[in-house]
Amino acid sequence: MTTPNILTDTTPVIDPDAPQSPSCVITDAWGLLYAQGGVVMAAALRSMELVLDRPELSLASASATFCRPVACGPVRTDVDVVRSGRRGAQVTGSLREGSRDPGSANVVVTAVFTDPTMEGPLRTPVPCPDELSTPANAVGPSISEEVGSRFPLGFLDNTEWRVAVPPSGQPGDAGPVPRAALWFRFNDQPSPSGSAWDPALLPIPGDSLGSALYVALGEGARPVGSVSLQIDLQVLAPMTGTWIGIDSTCTHVGAGLARGVLHLWSESGTHVATVMQTAMLRSFDG
Image 1 (cartoon, rainbow, N blue to C red):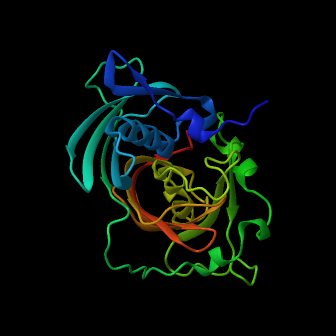
Image 2: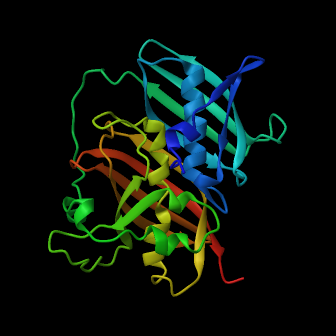
Image 3: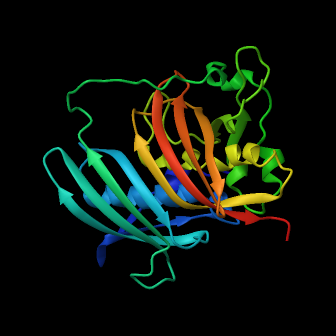
């Protein structure tokens, strides 16, 4: 049986009768009850890339607002290129399930694309956490099967997650700030070895506030999960390699919401992206 590939499964197709509204099928391979939020955002961004049709530009930032859950199955993204200039473009996309009427969006995404060859100063002041200095292959078994057994669909069957540890090999004390460091990979890689990922895929590992929320709420003492309301992505560098490091920090929990900041790192220690996420708390105790 072929392992599902995230790039193939989010590749949009243009409808000649509606060229501004590409579609794709998010299969059960990428579901957690509903389609995983980062996968939905990635599908919308890839449709926006296709309609923009500016290969010399690269995704620089994006913000997704989740209005309704997205069931696995056909989705369509209505795209509007707001501006397409010499060195950049701004694009909006409204993703809806295949059965929904135009104008009834499940997720609304805005994105900025820029020329990655523009010159200017380079500063990368955020240090890579110690936990991510130990390679993913050296930190022990995958936690995907243990976590995935709680859900009926396949997102966790087609990705691998490992708890990152510092060079000492001991998890250590996270301190007063609830945070979690993880390694993530797709079981079937989204790009050939040595080639960069499509940056539209970065929201998928970026949709990981739940790992730090788990720490913030007492590591499972309370049966509480979360559902994304908003994901904001800043793309900082190309992502190459198999594993991506996730440093997730929960910055606030209150009024039924959780908020956090996540940093994504390549295996070589490059700061690839920063994500801010807002999620609504959901009880899993019936």
